[in-house]
Length: 180
Image 1 (tube, rainbow, N blue to C red):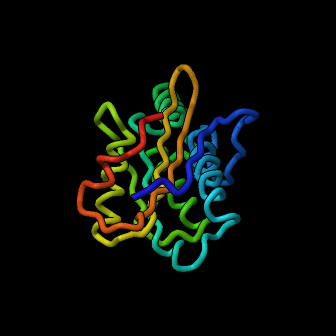
Image 2 (cartoon, rainbow, N blue to C red; image 1 turned 90 degrees about the vertical axis):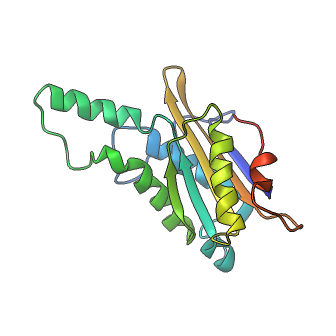
Image 3 (cartoon, rainbow, N blue to C red; image 1 turned 30 degrees about the vertical axis):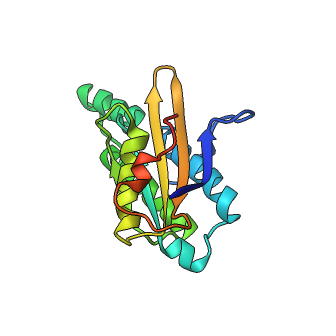
């Protein structure tokens, strides 16, 4: 497997990520969409990704903390007796935005959301991509790693694909690029 494209948010010159219709309050969905678009554009140009390639591209979204801003908003609203708006199905935000990216780009491979438990979320997500590619479920895998922290929100997207040589299980995870 090799890295076909990579992107970060923010990169030099970035302001806030563009909003995504249907997602409110949190920067989690806009960051996922922006970094995924940036990465996929570097490989495929404009959406959708070309036929066979797009049809066999998986999306893996990894976040240990998930959409903290929406979760905190819902918690505060419920704790103070307020009514949570209908767009705050915050538990499904990661799944929804991963599906949004897949639909926008015409990606027909598996869509997975992971909550990494190791010190190296990128290696954990890469290991999952390894399985998808090795088992034949996808030819490419878009990994989106995102965290919202007190020091700022950040996201990385990596598009992985099979190399020119035959590979076996575990080959991709062992040679995965470094975290962050």
